[in-house]
Length: 95
Figure 1: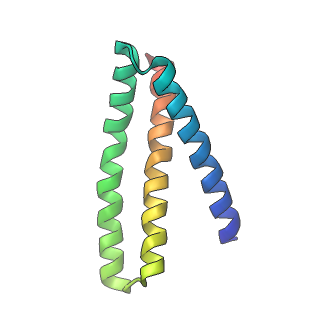
Figure 2 (figure 1 turned 180 degrees about the vertical axis):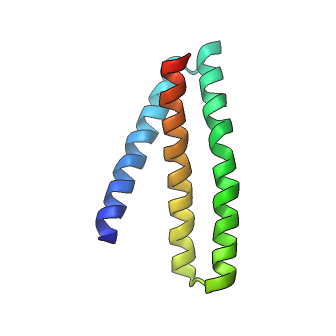
Figure 3 (figure 1 turned 45 degrees about the horizontal axis):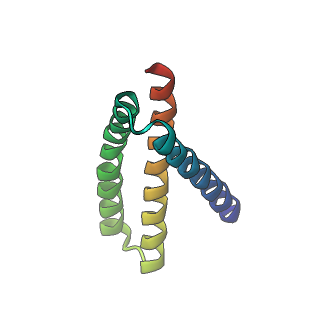
């Protein structure tokens, strides 16, 4: 089950990374593109802080091992990138 979750997360992360980079190269230089990128990043940034706080409190209660902590950080970074990608799609259609 975890392997499938990992494969799906990696596939979504790579797709979102490709789309985000393509958006930056094609539309990220004009004012509209900069606005969309800045808004999507500004909306996704609080999830990093919230995720890091949740990880800190989880580690304080359950004493995660180093590999578990690494996996949580990777999921946090990938999750925030996917959230930023979702905001990028929404703002691209809105503006």
